[in-house]
Length: 635
Image 1 (cartoon, rainbow, N blue to C red):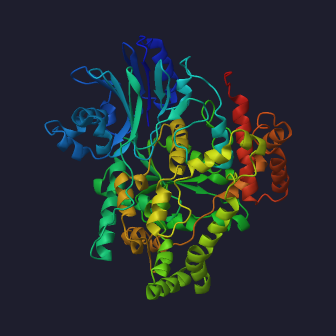
Image 2 (cartoon, rainbow, N blue to C red):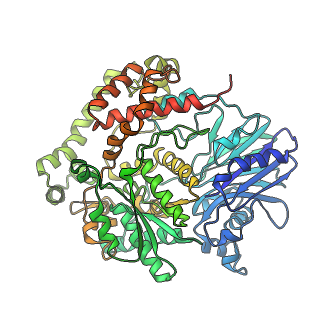
């Protein structure tokens, strides 16, 4: 996690060094280990350095190549280093002396604009190509590394965070009301726009090129293929193949010059990462893995029984090889206004828990932080396998799976059959048809009661929403279709950008093994019976973790519910702020349905266990605080 930025004056004005340096200073929190700038003519690039990998200790950015024709600034960790070193004929150099930015530059020299598709890892970078008078920018396949930009006829400006863009006077600071509506509606599918007009994010798995002589061009370089199918000869072969890919996804993320940390919630995902990392680190013999777990010992038993995962955490810790840290999340204050000063409002009720773990990691000199998000989607629960068995007539296998599932979850076979066979194949299509007939000839309605109806109508939100969601099918009847949809949602770039801003505060680099490109492609290509088998969801992961995970976790079907602590503490810690917004809502009055917000507050005050009410209040209050402190310019 470092910081990158740059300016390209398309009208050929020379870059003022002070402008670049000012942007670098604004991003100081992203890189405490050094800062530098490069400028030449109408182009300037800047960088803030956070050392994480051994190679990064040697890195000097921005980097000019040996010919002087290429200059790069990058926030990058490249994981397929050995493969690239061989393909780029760099084997005459010691691998440990080759930095990731040098690999990216060499890849660009060899493959040009195709280079991002050759890179495995997390990255955002910009290359100035002097010969072609072109700026080339790219972002990794999931958007782990952020990239924001502003482009006009006169200037192109980019940075790791929006706040740095505003140091350039030409960048407008105007509210994007459509994004406000998307926020209130909880829509995350627009992966380009921001809360500021004319400021955009480069979407994940995209690159852009810009020259002074032509318009900016943007293109996708990678996408998951929903048609790819992996066919092996046995369950054992699938298990071994998964274990190999998953182990590599963890191994390549252990490359660090500093202590390594990981979340440990006691769930299947974080435990699989921690236990695999533990084994790999034990083989290398150089360090133990720091684990960070949120605990809630002071919650009432009625809540604690849903949120307390300590028995599962302890089962992992007893394996040894860990430096375990428990974070008293029950004593932390839920956050409202931590991160979005001069950035964007976010809706993340449990972010304060991760912040507590990040702070603890920072205190222990950890710089690399492994996280289990989002194993559920990458591996896939696979429940639609039961639906597939039903509508393809494989009755015997269906009844065997329903029987095994009923025993596993203590649910009747009748309930399982209705929920997974009758409802999705017969009831849901009829419901969709009925809704379609009712809406025929009318505009699509908005979903959230929180939004001001007049505001929604004024900006034509229904039409925008319909267009934004037009690619989504009305019905999902196969496990693979559901799997693909879950991995391509805008939710994950949103989560990753939010997390990036949090880790930046604590000089951490978040790393996400389940978002490894190779692992995602592998899991999506699996047959449905590898995702759900013998009553177990995420079957392939469970099978692969035999003799790695404690059986207690390998066979676990429950999941902790972190919302209980937030719901109990939210009003306790923020009642004064919430009531101030409720009583003086001028900043959100044009956008929010105030009677609905006040009713939600009244109900929540009496019944704090209401999750839906708490989220509505958090959304409205967060928006109000952000709007009140943002200095927008007049149109």
